Amino acid sequence: MSEDLKKYVTTIPDFPEPGIMFRDITSVVQDPDGLRLAIDSMQDLVKDVDFDVVVGAESRGFIFGTPIAYNQHKAFVLIRKPGKLPRETEAMSYDLEYGSATLEIHKDAIKPGQKVLIVDDLMATGGTIEAMVKLVEKLGGKVAAVLVLMELEGLKGRDKLPGYRVESAIKYEGK
Image 1 (cartoon, rainbow, N blue to C red):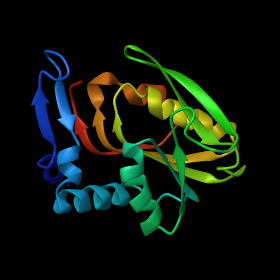
Image 2: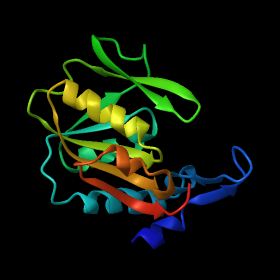
Image 3: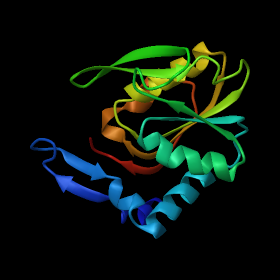
């Protein structure tokens, strides 16, 4: 399935800088067959996971998390950049390759004990997903699994998530 899905990913060499092979997921979602295959492939990877709610980060986590939540008749919880959520929030800052970022979630979005499926488009260094895990757990949720469309294995994001089930529909060996 992974190889079939890879044909929908456009690779742009030397973007955003020389030596980087940028894996563009917009070509996946712009193709109706690619989008369907992406969602179906991701869902298949977690068909045995028991979860109560799906969490996705702004903005590409919304693209993949919402249809999975809809198909499984589960709630979808948004994690956003600071200042975008209207009610009281919890925040988590994390390091990026060049700088730092912060994510926020509504304080009442996850109930203590809820089993959570975290969904995003990409796992590179793992910083964003690690921050999402921490936010979920800060609210008392239990991470049932982490699910991504694409994983850049060379950046070792999995290493930040020991003890968590991590599934990826597409894996690239490099960075």
